[in-house]
Image (cartoon, rainbow, N blue to C red; front, top):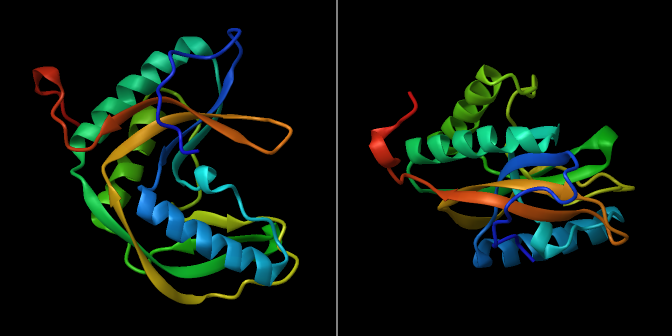
Length: 197
């Protein structure tokens, strides 16, 4: 199930493996899940659970509880700086050596690029480690693929992006479990008129 209920913080005071992400609306989630099942069958890979399908904006790794307040402030400020937007996934491809098949957009909207850029700058300014590779927006469709998924066009999957979320990744016997720590609607002005440039 897609994370929907924010939680106050980490359990037992332990560091959390955290990331900022976009979660698809119900229609996009269902379409991506169907595509993931098809790709996994063709590549003899493993599709993620429908509720785990997401687009990572920034991966942070282990974060101690004392730093979560800073991440919440960053998430709120970045979300306020970017309006809601439409995203269309219409491409499939693979990270061949990693055995991962993905869905992406042939024309990523400017708002998506801006979200990622603002997060990178704000995180770097607060001393968090940031990804040095170029931002490659995608949703993982299958892992451990034993044959190549190929690259090309796919039937368009529209996604209305209305919020960003801060999440924790936790291990479970059935694979990763994602827990939403907080979320913010896009384009909502912060109290006091705080904005990012």
